[in-house]
Picture 1 (cartoon, helix red, strand yellow):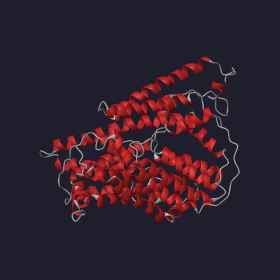
Picture 2 (cartoon, helix red, strand yellow):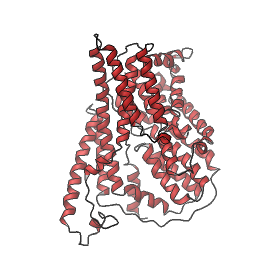
Picture 3 (cartoon, one colour):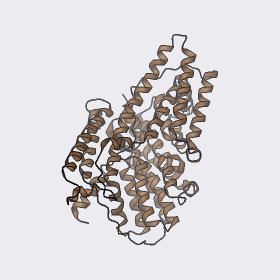
Picture 4 (cartoon, helix red, strand yellow):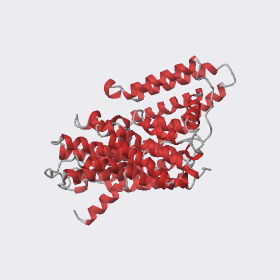
Length: 491
């Protein structure tokens, strides 16, 4: 591979971006109706629990995860409104709901732009070209194990762990499909690496984006947990290394060329990322505004692609135009709104349900009760700087069972008074805790489906002890190397 292509691949690994982000409308405490012991409060809690059980059973029920939480959100807020419609709290309840909807509106715009860019790059065959390049290298199983893990670790800080894991798993499946043991262990490694890599970057995981866009931590401060994230990845990877067979599969000669405009779309994506960060950090505007500005650039470029390709007839010999044909040699114009159509609408609606459900439970008083228990009672016997440590470690453990998004959103809604070191700790644990079980993150669930039985819940469970060692070591390293941050009060 020549130097130009090598440089391009390196740049590409720095341009992928997450399909998930979360915004917050403010730092105010939510309305607390103190209705946790009433029939309305208990009913709302039961409705949410039933809805989330349906979400967790999506693979078996074949019911999209957005449907139960969207229904639960409507019922919960309907119960709240019905219980307060005849008194002075009705206006406050309406204002609280509008705040939740505003949070979702910012989320929707942010996600829609990110998903559209990812879909545009996929349509231009950016990810397929990277996969084909990797499978042509003729690597040994152990080399492939480490390369896919390291790439997953360094791609996920700027790409969501789901996209990263699927890309690396495609490489593993392409060259190691005949070795189920290798596929299973490599998938465990990829899930751990993708989750660990996303934990130290504001763009790496939905939980880090929650904290950053909430305005709790500055952009650069997240990189203080880079070393703990590395430890979280390296310890289980080193242990699993010795279980990888010392064999070398045959290299596959697969050639895939990116379509016309792919590199320019990648560049526009980088500009959009920069715009979103600048709008938030410098202008103190919601990152969604920066993302929508970058989306406008993509729209104009899509117009250029459409107009420039239509000038040349289908019968003319033009290598760039040839890339815009499918296998049947039918012309495929680049339509930006087709990329918008392919956004993960189930995910977008799922976040609507989660935000409104958690917001409703907070309004009823459940999160205030939970905050008192976790962030005050549990750490009462510890020194002040570590009073929140047990709760923040528990957040990571819960993330391996329950999706880390509602868990982290609940913490942010509770908004406990913590030092910068503690906020970084909960960001770390929420990000990497899901690695302990295959169902603890979107990456693990997706890979179980992609590998068709080679990577399963029990093949992952076999290495949970090693992953837990990495989890504990990462926490210890963070407390050790960032000890001064535990004394730093956020302003």
